[in-house]
Image (cartoon, rainbow, N blue to C red; front, top):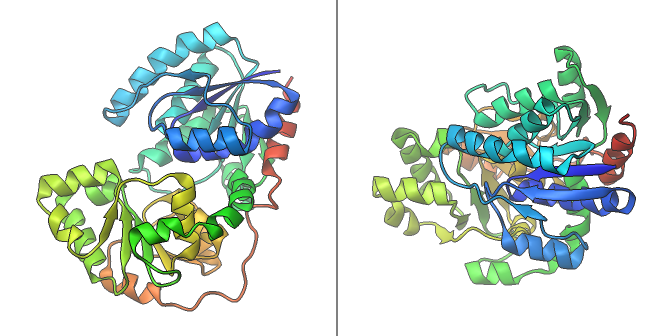
Length: 353
């Protein structure tokens, strides 16, 4: 079987690293990276540690609005799919690259397999929600990470086949967490000690593009009674600079450039808590058994909230500060599987005609 895998950002590369190890032992795979967000350090790590090669095809199509990205990617992926003639196109998650890979394949009459299908935040204003719902609608294989995602799809009656595989991020977390716990260099560079700081990520358009909400975010971060380490997303930096608040934030928060996967994971596993508006970081914090405070009022990873490891506070500073010191739950369930999701993904692909 010839599999064309379409990637667009770092979290998708992480997930693909787990699956590609298993996939390439059985089938032929071509990795395509659209360039929506390419992490060269991560590709090097996976090439060295997991034997997963760098993407064979890099399109370099980053930048622009969601609409512009989607248009550019479709224009490139359509001919590419025709040229490569895969038996299946494999996509991950909820980015523009997920949707464009799925559309290009579906329009070419090629089966689409969607890893992380069925996730729902029920917030249609989120571009990610639009991408995941539309991708699910055109997929032939809907590979779900949790029973909640499976139930979501059963209510929607999609045309494709729903299969529970678990979350491939569990596979990756199990592999890299021991190494991350030994990595204190990232903490030393930030000037923080284990258990005595909060790691933060924020980049959602809903939080940083609206100046009123951006101001609430700045005030919240400055009010946190712990050192806050904030690897600054380019989008967030640009909005803070335009508003004239970057220097003010730098006076009370430890700012750093975006971090590679291993350095960020090292901060996450050693942090007192994670403060984030990222779906992926919510789940990574849960897997690391780090309390999480989410700067949104909805989440697709509902199990993290139901289990008590995650609290949704939107941009309410008082609620965020209170949540940072809540006791950790006594139990840690495993709603996302047993660390063998990658094998199940490849097993599912084998069922395609």
